[in-house]
Length: 230
Image (tube, rainbow, N blue to C red; front, side, top):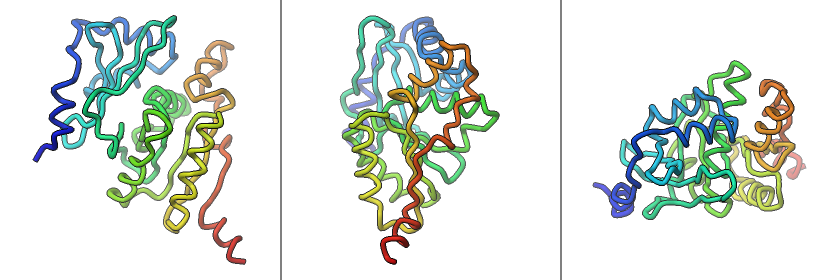
């Protein structure tokens, strides 16, 4: 049975524009996201352009829209926000094939990491992604870890600022009793992962040079607990 939240979100999705020109230009040129990643989002109905030229991101649970957010395409005027009726318990979630879950603050950060992995010759569809749509909505992580037992690793790829680091520490503390789980922190050298890829493009460096995994500050919960117990 559909919840009121899900029905409301489905009814509140903005009307589609007749084309995707502004969204494609904004994501591939301004945000430097891989064209195939953008097209994949479009094919999966997770991205379209509304009549005001905004990016509309939508995630689903059993083909029912459960989370949607807008991102303006005007480079000079920042605009973003969640749509009415979002299910914050589920968040913007993409269920991949493997046992690793990458957590980001925004969908564009997730797309940026997908672009890095693709450039390295890795299949980003082997990873699941959860975008918190801000740093104060991490209940969605608990929901997906509780409801999806396949996850063995959580890669926290939040912003490299005080807010991002604070939420990472809170998440690590919250799941400290999960002995089956390995949590690692992955901070970009820039403020966030999208800024990281745009900086690389600006300086003409390939995204494959970004070592998303090696740059991480690693905290293995099981190892830490063993140290504490000693």
